[in-house]
Structure formats: C-alpha cells, structure tokens
Amino acid sequence: MKNEALELTWPAEGVAQITLTRGAEMNTLTHALLDGMEGVLASLKGSGVRALIITGSGRAFCCGAHLDYFTEDQLGRDAGFRLRDTYLDRIARVFDSLEEQPYPVIAAINGFALGGGGELALSCDFRLMSKTARIGLPEVKLGAIAGAGGVQKLIRHVGRSKALEWILLATHVSAEEAERRGLVYAVTEPDALLPEALALAERLKALSPRAIAQSKAAVYLSEDADLRSARRFGLEALSLLIGGTDWTEGISAFHAKRPPKFG
Image 1: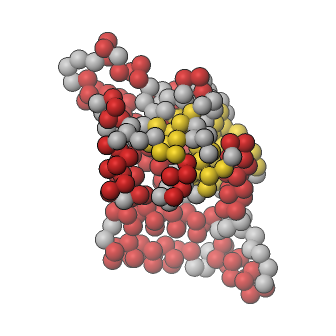
Image 2 (image 1 turned 90 degrees about the vertical axis):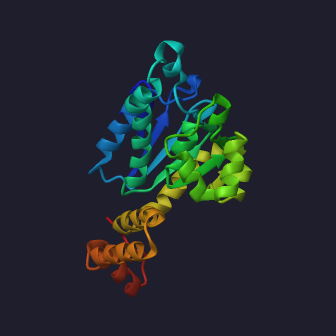
Image 3 (image 1 turned 180 degrees about the vertical axis):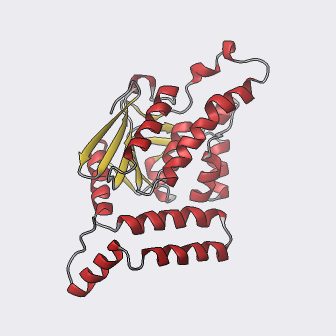
C-alpha cells in the first residue's frame, strides 16, 4: 500500500511498517498523509498484525503541520475554527487512534520529530530514537500551541515541570535527554534504528496478543480514570482473558516448562 506521502511494508511476518516518504518536505502532515494513515489503520484490522512501526525518511521523522495550509490566502475571519474543523481535529483523531489500536505501535524516530511530529511520536506506545534525532513541541516560536494532544501527553510522560520547560522554551530535545527523562525506549546509532525497532516488534510478537491488547487499553484508561474505576477495568479485562486461547496456551506452556506459542 502506497500513496504520495507514505508507504506500508511488512518487514517481518505480523509486523507492519509505515514509512513517511516525503523526506524532502520534512514529512509534514498533509491531507494525503492523513488519508494514508487512516487507510493503513483500516487495512490492518483483521490482518493479523502484531506490531506496527512508524518511521520517517530523509532528515525528518515528521515536522508537524503542513504550513502551506496556513498562508494568508487561507486565513481571515474564523480561520482558526475552519482549520480546526477541517484539518487540526483530524490530526488529533488520527493520533488518538494509534493509542486505541489493539497492537503495539512503535515510533522509530530517525530525525526531527517536531510539533505535530512530536505529537505523533508521543501517541505511539514505544519510541526509539536515533542519536542524531530531536523531538519537541516548539510551536511557541510560531505563535501557536501543540493542539493535537502533545501538551497533555508530554505532561504524562515527563511531568509538569519538564513539560513546561521544553514547551515554553521551544526545546529541540536530544535523544540522550529524552532517554534520561524516560520518554524513549532506546537510543541507537542511525543505521541500527530500524533493526532495533524490528527486534522490539519480535519481542512483542512472542507475547499474548490478547493480553497485550487488554493491557494497553488498561494503561491508557487508567490515566484518565479514578483508581477504583481503573482497577475495576483491569479486573474485567483479566476475566475476559481467563479461559481464552492465549490463557490456555500460556498456562499449558508454563506447566510444561516450554515457551508459549501464541497465534
């Protein structure tokens, strides 16, 4: 699957990879890219995918909003609300949908992940960064704010004080600093980024896909729920898993002292 902004490949069985292909234009969030993302996510339903890797090309992972949509010709009365309804809200919905997928989503950050690109990375379950990459929400330089969930998600990852520092100073955060703050899973040499992302996907493939789906949902739900409600969700999720095929295989493998083989 391919369009003018991205390409879907399968680097291993059960592992899908989205590569943003407009590297010369810093892989900005055009409508074509959003079309492609929506199409890929729809196509992966029922495909047996066990993990999804998202990466960029050229110097950028993704450098955020496509600023050609913000020219003087596009602006005027109620421009902000029109852009919200026709473009910005769509970006937020696509990013949020990554968190809602039942399989893990891995951001392999090859270069600049700024603005909406940073928000895209923050919406993935795992982040790996090349040593030369940078991530940040520097919208204040443009008189704007990260409006597709980046502010809220960054606070949850690194805490209020560090989020305020990075956002208000428009910081391009290095891979080493991001790793130190717990924002990324691993930092790699540039040529090792995709092999490391694939190795992580293979580790995830060895685990129960049904348990991963329920665990992922429990984590995201717990961020916005009170402790009692979050605990109750976890209990119900466990109840759904008990007696299922993955549960049966996992328990059998444990007693037989062998690695489980999940379908």
